[in-house]
Picture 1: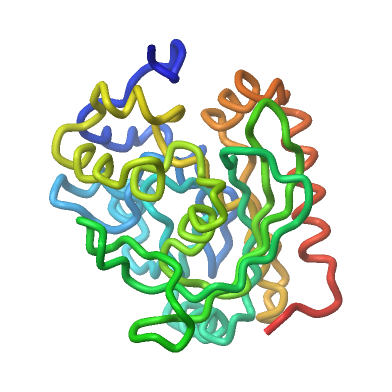
Picture 2: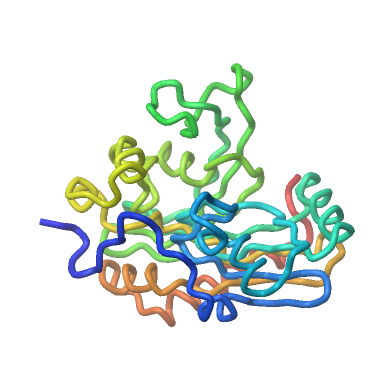
Length: 283
């Protein structure tokens, strides 16, 4: 029996961006910045399938912005706040701030299992040589070849029905950090094809789309990870940029956790407020 209930299955290939939808994804825009709420099925960088197959291409085509600079990337299956700079000066300023870890990021995720107390994970990450996918990371001994110091704090917002809605505070920014640390904790991100119950699901999806094995092993068609807020104020830009709890994750939480969307959003808003209200942030 599928764990997906009556949710529609994803197509073999991600759809192209509907130009009519693009304006609704814009969360903020001024002369310097464009802020997009990226859906959890869309790649960020241009792909071989044309401009409407990626966020960068769609922004150029649909919004007429040729000079844009992505400040960071989100994985295809991670939704939420993406910031694009409209000019080189703003892009350079933000890139330097990101390099100095001045930019605050708050993520939310749904994890398998129930956490009742905050958990700080201070475990180095590096390539996973046992995986059949070169991008996969894992916890490795600190100081070993390729190891990068990595720190994540998981803040449980509510645990119910065998799952936990967590706010995630990133104190470093490593590849797949949240997902790899969640796997190490034994509390995987729901729907994760690479760090979930079987990493071969990742390649299988890339080659064949959603299969019967995905339905049997995963309870969501994409990883339940969302970038809820980005704080540019430590970089002396007066912006706290947010993206609302997305509809697909809200639907899952309502069905599996009996968590109404309004309650989830209130918990997320409170987490964001607490995270960015601190007088000083760890280096």
